[in-house]
Image 1 (cartoon, rainbow, N blue to C red):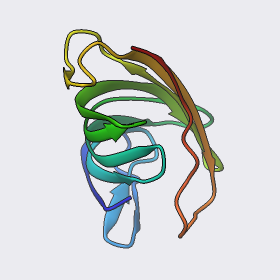
Image 2 (cartoon, rainbow, N blue to C red):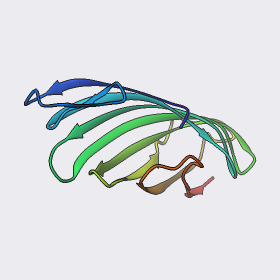
Image 3 (cartoon, rainbow, N blue to C red):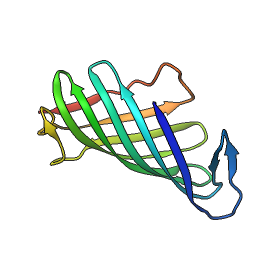
Length: 133
């Protein structure tokens, strides 16, 4: 992760918690604008706009990411749709390539990835994409 800028849109109860300058509502939702750096078989940068809900237990998240770079030697860009959920321990999501939004060598790519992240990592997180060209 290169950057994360999250701002509360709705704090239903007014009982948010501030951590490192970011407010997280007990119940509500926020928008996070983020940038990811990818390395390995997938090289490049992803720019994401997330909508993140907050509620006790599992809470849904969604977003769109524009990836620009190279996937297994195919250069171009594409868009991932993120659909998932999170709780206090983990984030789970499915990233699906949105058809019709790719360019260059990624224009015809279809596929998806499942991501599960638990805890903080300074070394990044594994990401496996299953795709067809």
